[in-house]
Amino acid sequence: MPAWLAYTLLTALLWGVWGFEAKLLVDRASPYASQVLFTFGLVIPLGVVLYSKRRFSGERRARGFSYAFLTGLLGGGGNVAFYMALQGGTASTVVPLTSLSPLVTVLVGVVFLKERISLRQYGGLALALIAIFLLSL
Image (cartoon, rainbow, N blue to C red; front, side):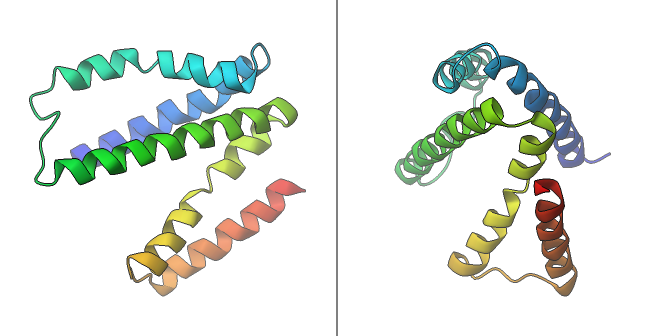
């Protein structure tokens, strides 16, 4: 199995359990407290990264740091919105709907990065939009 596929499957597993666990969290804490607690949970992965020899590698580090900071802001804001959605909705609806966020990624990639998508990928986008409709019923 290629390493990227193993990491992909591990991500799906961890994020899948995370979506379930997040509902347990917001039933016991506010969305804002949830985000703070989520951030404290990043201490262990942060330690692993800080001990990595490649932690600050790259040719354009200043730009990379800027993108990393923006990514953190977007992710943190998304987490707070996610926790607020879970507070009012069910995990079985909120998690799958928010998991359709790659639609936004694809559209941004097409518009700003001039990426091309195939006919098959257009079909996938259409199915994702149908899924959004079906999940929202």
